[in-house]
Length: 601
Image (cartoon, rainbow, N blue to C red; front, side):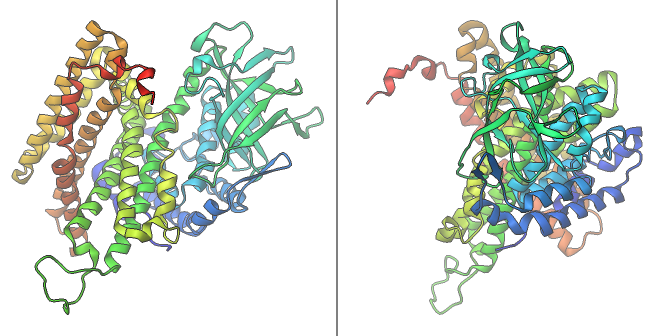
């Protein structure tokens, strides 16, 4: 079943009618671009996704990576994917001209990554990881590091990775034990292990370049002692030839989904000759890595949204063609069966999928718009976009990751028993989707980040800016009486968020940090429902404006569908805010009072 996996119309609707991406072209950084250029780039991304990524979607899952004789073998098309991604400039889209890129806005580059992920998530990860690693070198590395590594990474010849996690440390980066010893020749020798490294080794490229966290001998304890290094699989020897850099794969992990990209465990320095080159200043590695991590968190949300999109379009195609039963009230067994999309509950499931997918995509593209504006502005305006982006990043990572699983599950439900079989793509999409609540910081980590840091950062300024953004959209919607009920719902939910936030801040002062953060995931869920409702209001306003013009019948169906999805989300999903608020304001810290012995048989 090789059908539609993404809507080009929706991507361009968001780019142009919702976020006005062309307005970025008035800034010097993006002045060489235009709306026509953005559309061309999106069309080319779709062509590459359809011709190269999507045809091997199932094959990459069924012929996953294998570890043979010290080499990780991946699908033979991975090399072509990396080569074409490099040749077409897809890895370096957002890079400056000086670093070999196209200076494309993040919002346009993100739209293209979304297309690649929807076509084949595993395939899209290879170039995306490389871009993130290369961007760290471009931002914080010296000229020598940039000249040595970036060209081959942007060309797709070298893979890039982010090597943070260790066997005993997990998400607690303060406890990493990989060590780096300075050498007189300007490099460091590294010793240690890393686990769960995506793309950590494979034969689809000529080399792998790890951006690795380690502690220099004698460094301060905890996160203040972490430094960042470039640690390649192969390094050049004195004759200019590549030689082993004492980075070995000890195993690859066998996963339930996302099987087309290897996840490896690495051992560095078994022979005492693993060399790394310091990126930036000593002991500032975690701050540097967080740049890539925040980009990656948006990328994880984007990947989850893309998978949900592919599942939605698979379900849509199936429900339009599958005939079963008759509508309630049609008693004549001789009457023709109807396509199952005519049944109200199937429409409910499809509306849920569309509302989650397109609402999440809107939120992520809003974040990319803020990232672009942060890049091109200064002073107080720059701070505004920075704070909004910081606040929304954990939500943009988590809402698609968690709700995308539910959306993909509803796609399976649309297929009935067929959806549970690998004859149809949604079984694989469901497995592929499950990694996202874990990748780049679990849902709990994102919840604690939002409640424990982002909401109170800059004396609550980020939170206040968010409320201003939502309120501004609500005021615009007041011009349309048919939106009044939904504006009222969103306004009440915003008041609830404010009440809950104030309550939890008081809890932090009276009951301590553990109880304050105990239900941070629920707070994140509540906040996410409001943030996506805001995005749906923004999209509904754009659709309403379009409908007031000379829209064709086909376009009218699209815009009216947007308004139905908006009504669905605020009518079906937003009310969950009240139940979450009830739990979050309850004076019953049961998860803190419960101890491990209470889980005994």
